[in-house]
Image (cartoon, rainbow, N blue to C red; front, top):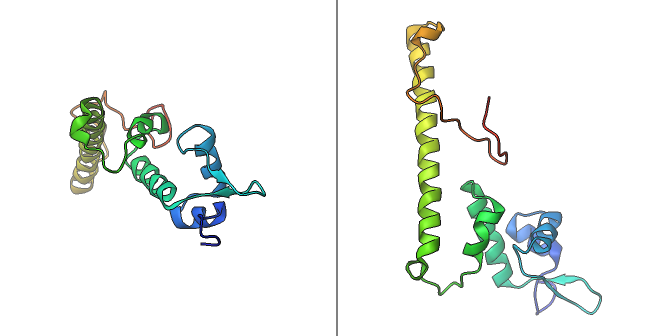
Length: 145
């Protein structure tokens, strides 16, 4: 730490594995609280801010959108998720969506394995049990085509 009061944005970026621009953006949209400022107006981040940055990164890796994660970031570290049934439901729904994606991906792997085993690329040997489900691209709102 360059000062006893906290980390510069550069240090926070290095420690959180986020870019400085991403940190500024997360502040702008309210995902992160506005950083304290030094007399020279440079941002100062505290260890608690780094924990939130790491949580955002973790939730983002699960495919959760920035809007979806906002309510989770308002919890304190002492919070008990069981005391927030609405958030438990949201987390369970997110888990179910991920499980559906895993199932869809497994069907795709099964088709590829079947094609490799049979040696045939004819469409009649390509069976996906639920062709209506598409895997969304990470970071995109439209399905793969």
